Image (cartoon, rainbow, N blue to C red):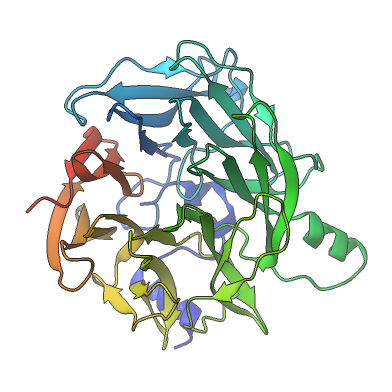
Length: 406
């Protein structure tokens, strides 16, 4: 049985038709008995300087055909109660809000609110990376702006955003300008590319369209994290020669100069479609890199975790969960490290976790939450109260669950 057939048989991912279609927007569409209708549960979470938990989601406009709004809610009691939703736009527009693509939320040094999202365009699988900011705590918002200078009708999608310790904003995305140009020249070009832009003025403007790497996977989310020195590092699914979809790592430079790219997974998965399954990344204060990813190794698909020391030496990967495990995230805070992922048991989906309170030397396995309906991917957030799971489900709504308490 070949690798792709094994994935279909185990029910892990729908890789073929739905990998690039609307049906892939529902994370549970592949499970028997679940409806395949699009469920827009995509959520991002962040904590401001006062320790308040914020979430960014999408609210459909009155006329769905006209688009949606990015909306914000805040909780001062770690998810027990939430403020009313506040729209970040004056008018709706199309917004991707499920699966690997969702609005992103981050805060500036003075609690400026930054939002980034993908706006789909008229042609399938095309989009623009949009950005909105508020400099008054969400009372007012600037009009949305497009981050990249390139305005071709191509893929600019699957953005990720991070703010460094100086307040500089980085936004990275998947881009197909080079693939499109190669095709016009009748040249081969595997996958897409990773580009990024930088703002030094709190999001008033962006510079860049800096290319980080050619030959990224087309539809996997990009992981971003600050390393121990406070520099932004990105991890993405890359297409290595001859056609291996493993993962690469590189630091984002504010001047856009080329960065050294390192291969950080070695599963040798050869597949001709994008699995819609990006990695997760976090750094401990001692420089340890914690990474989680989905791959197929030795004809068996699954989630994996590995850590590397400050010198970049990677330890032996550890498999997470059962065959149905998917969409892992990772967070590190002090000596605490949490890995969390979704796992469907045929009736319900649970968020399971591995928790270490000693920087990864020992681990405990825990169940953090479960639901019988559709759900977003799990998000882990560092808060003043520890690492918290933020998980939005169709049946239970928004939940914030402590993940690293003894």
